[in-house]
Image (tube, rainbow, N blue to C red; front, side, top):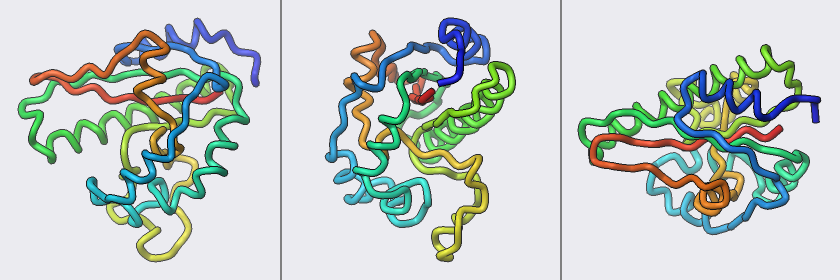
Amino acid sequence: MDKINLEVVIEDILNFGAKYAKTFNTKELEFSDKFREYCEENRCGNYGTNWMCPPGVGDIEKLKLEVMNFDKGIVYQTIYPVKNIKDRNETDKIRDMHNDFTRRLTEHLKDKHKISNILPMGAGPCKICPSCAYLKEEKCYYPQKAISSAEAYGINLGTLLTSCGLKFNYSEDSLAYVGVFLL
């Protein structure tokens, strides 16, 4: 791991616009294959349509090993106002705003803190491209910008948030999304 001061990085993440941010040890992560089962049920409509969603993102066991190559992580939340929590179009737009935030923050952290090895995870599917190259059986057009979700990697976010003293913050007028950086 690069020599970085995680407390300074946390402060920077909060100043960048995240509502909450906490560090964790990757050894403490809980994995569950159930998240893949949820993906296979395709409730969100993205299974088999995106390189950053299952099955395109890769074999769950290999992804778990990739995660365990990192020692530390940071979990953070963004919270946005929402007019209608039941409006899928609105919540999808907010999710995409969270993922855009994650991409911008990733670049900021790399540049400012000289972090050479960072694995960002956002929420839900990657939506950089209007139509993912996966559907055309082509390689990802933007592999350096594409991000997957922690759930696609099998990470139990509920347990992670609880262990960090955080919780999902949903209400009728706000929507929270969770992201993870592995360092």
